[in-house]
Image (cartoon, rainbow, N blue to C red; front, side, top):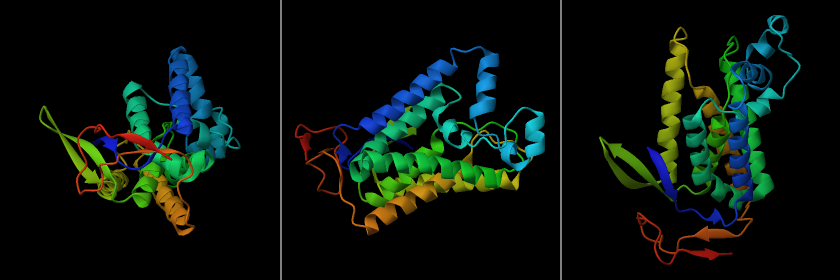
Length: 255
């Protein structure tokens, strides 16, 4: 399932989302302009490596500072390849503007950044002896997906489901999309813990931690009665049970 379009009220000018996409892209381009040795040094200093904190003596032996907690934040601005970057930024573009509108730019950035830190902490707790560098915005974006589903559970997410070489565009409720996505993370995460001898390339439990934080964040905001904070863009033709498969002519802007 790959999200293609959503129907929740989106920030008309999602400056926070666009800034995050720009920063992630610029960091990626900069990192891949470095030599292989240069990238390795950057990863050692700014990617999350669990043993930095769980085995301080060993960390110091290999040149890691166990008192440096910046990697809990900086790792979410680095990516391991173009596909990693593109997928993460696309998910951020689909789900982020609605959350920026709902929580305001400052509130959205809190959701994103704290969600990413919580995701990293969850990875530390589940992989305390790992020496593998962890990087990417997936944990923060998991928080955004969960907050979106809690805030707009009935909003339709037009999803691409490939059947062989034929893409099907299927509108599904946001809560169902998020539930399937989260279920896959839990399935993969528990499988990874059950077979620790098999190294995992994806930080599944970071996704789970970020998702849990995002759901809690949105639930608290909803309980506090928080309403839309910025100007939004919406579809007029979404009062029925199904959304159109492409933007209709009466796609307009509202305050």
